[in-house]
Image (cartoon, rainbow, N blue to C red; front, side, top):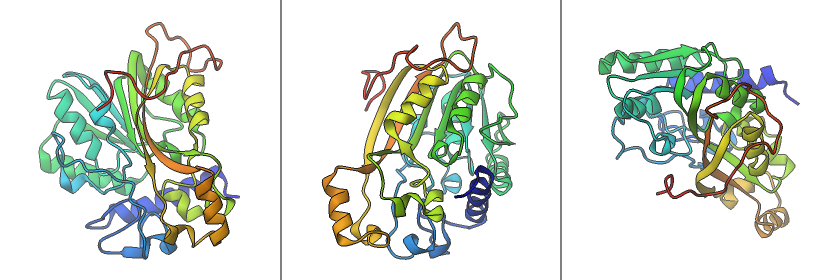
Length: 300
């Protein structure tokens, strides 16, 4: 079993390779390198698992910053207002930061945090080309953010938290950097039912956003335990694994059982708020209120 640091090293290496590519076509495919993408050689060589969704119609979208690594549109649901301070966790080449900047405007501030130096470099080049003076990128670990407390009005993240080994610490850090009454909107990958062990153990697939995912109920409990309230699943969609992918790991009988049991992989976008009177980054489960998808103000 990989240690937390080994997992981070694998993630960092894979995403550094992606940052250095001239063009990618999604979380599990690369237009130029094909089988050497983030999802690992066996999967991406023939049948990509497409987690990404299109940003094309969102204000602020910058094609050069879109590496196709997301699994949702968190900025679309983030309720960003002009003048807000927005932090993007796992900011990559800056895609969500630039969309957030279109919402917060010149009077706001956007900060991208990423643990891959090559991604930071690429994001800064994109920012320089765009001429933005209120978008910054910071090198750092989501489990130990080099950012002051009570900084952000809004936190966004796109298909990143599932890659973090200590998710409880990551969400506690998210709580710390948010201002009282601030909120996050995070798109991520979660599971319903247990994945077969051969899928769960595959380290390459981990970097492809699947094996690092946890059960949806456990994910929401972690958010609650970090101190957040008003927890809402803003959007949910199934990520279908084709039989051609499952056959890499499972027998025909195991595939049939996988389908019949209703197990699966889902993309969710989760909203949660830091209480106005927050004084601690960790509370006991059950002390806040959570709701399921979906409130009238957050859904399409």
